[in-house]
Length: 280
Ligand code: NAD
Image 1: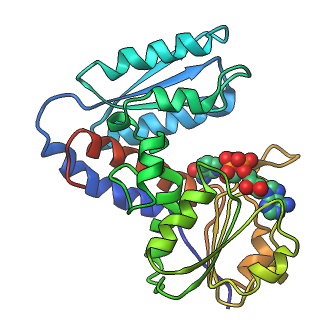
Image 2 (image 1 turned 90 degrees about the vertical axis):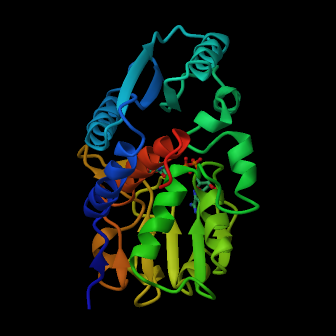
């Protein structure tokens, strides 16, 4: 039987509907999320517009600050420090990629951890080892949310995460470890990727290589979460998973686009409301 497609757009819509009353409970004060971008990136312009639309639906005012491409790391840090001190700013988000010469770790560390709605400040990243933090990294939280939406019991499940980046693969692995699944992390140094993916009840792929995972690498009935975003030769956006062959074997599969992406944006909004004091 073909996989059940996990509709991220619908799940994100349901999340936003739950966030709205939590936002309203904060009263009439403005809840501001500031997005900072250095230079102009056409791909991120689309992404930012989607974020703004979703934020408006929840009642969050998203301000976009475009800094010139000549901005130095020190200028960017000064901008972030100014935002840290503005009381009406609940959350700060820095759009990636940053131009060469700006270290994303320095930038992320300059944001007040209580306004770090992407959950990437070292304090929030470190806290994830103790438990799921108040402001978890958005993509990792989105992947977990999609898995939980299937109703699969994570305790004891064989979970394989392909990709071990700081912002995606590692935090996903840790969140799923907290749920007592048995987690294997694969990466560029893994010798036989197939050997690992074929025994996964839950497979999360976060690499950035179109077509890396095919149907013959999947355990029948597995839950497959495709985090990858790649632009095909025809300009279309595809994930890391070969959709048709994997859908024929898996039990659940996220599409790209329309899977992890919209839920990641909903997590960003949830984190912003949490940073503003909401209990969501
Ligand atoms: P990254 O480049 O920082 O990390 C890539 C990871 O893949 C590394 O751990 C590397 O070891 C591993 N890898 C590379 N080649 C491999 C191979 N052949 N076999 C196994 N592992 C291999 O990337 P990232 O920032 O973690 O992003 C990963 C993907 O997720 C990208 O496509 C990115 O665009 C996407 N992404 C999506 C969202 C979302 O909201 N949907 C958010 C962030 C990133």
